[in-house]
Image (spheres, helix red, strand yellow):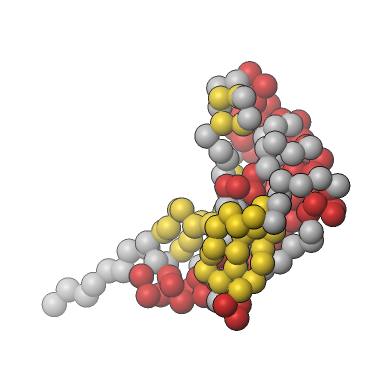
Length: 176
């Protein structure tokens, strides 16, 4: 009789947010950023943008424990965690996007550290400022041990083949 071999099942499309973060409008001095507004006794949260509802999310979007329960229920062994794309904030001032990227990346790293057999992290970087993005890429690889990043399909007016982005691609290649 043959025994069943359990193959790993990896979910690459899994977004996560911190359970809370500072008021970004207050922090940076201008609006356009997403904030979480808990509702339904913490089971859900409203993603608010300048006071308007952007989307309602379930607690598995910020709770690693809820996420692990979902993984068990669906036989997923590993998730690659990345931020919600609206958080990329490529439109914002580069230093503010770097600060936000670090906040998001550090949160993902904390989940990976706490549950290393369940999660792997994919970072976000301020792509609108390639040299600044390169700084965060080096931190992601060297300090947080992330194997990669998640990016948008374009960066403001740039397609991904824009020469301005070459330093980012070169750094990715160099970091392996």
